[in-house]
Image (cartoon, rainbow, N blue to C red; front, side):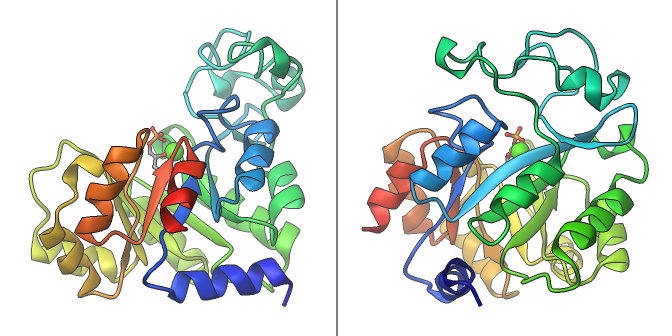
Length: 260
Ligand code: G3P
Ligand code: CA
C-alpha cells in the first residue's frame, strides 16, 4: 500500500486527531473546485479535498458548485447546458485573483487521475434531481479510473439527498457514504439516525447543529461526524470540545495547526 493510503487509513482510526477536509479545495486560498485549489489543499497537508460534482450536456462529470457557471467563471448559464468542450473554455480562476487566470472547470476524471491515493477525496453530488443517473455515472467512473481496488478510506461520496445515497449504496456498497444535514433541521431523531446509519458511515451536519449530545448519539452508531464549513480558528475549538471527527474548512492550515 502506498504511504499516503496507509497514513490516511491510520489517521481515520486515530480518535485524537481531526480529519482535515479542504472545502472545495483550499477555497480560502485559491479559486474553489479548481486544480489550483486542490494542489493548495495538498500543500497545506489536508487529509481530504472536498469537491462538488454536476453533469454537462454531454454527460461529463464536472467539478463545480453552483448550478450556474456565473459566479465562479467568466461565463453565463447553467452547467447542464454546456458541453464539456464549451465549459473548458471558461476561465474559472480570474474571478478569485488575477494570478489564477487560466484555471479551468476540471472533470472529476482529471481530479481522480491527479489525486487518488495522494489525498483523500470527498465527492459531493450536487443537485441530483437535475441529473438523473448521476450516481451510475459516478460509480462507473470510479471503477474505470481506480479499478476494483478501491481503498475505502480514499474516497467518500456525500449528499444532502438520502434517497440518492440509498441508491448509491445498492449500486456500489464498497464506496463509503456521508449524509449532509442542513442547518435548518430542528433536531435529529433516533429513528432518523437508525435509518441513516444503516447506509452511511459519515453524518456531516452544518457546524451550527453540532452539540456534544448529538456527536455522542451519532458515535453510538459507529458513524463519524465531520461538520461543514469552518472559516475561523475559534469555531474549531468548540467543535473539538463537542467531539467531532474532522472539520470541513476553507482554511485547512488552521485545522492542521490545531492537530499539532
Ligand atoms: O462538505 C459540505 C459542504 O461542502 C456543503 O456545502 O454548499 O459548500 O457544498 P456547500
Ligand atoms: Ca460541497
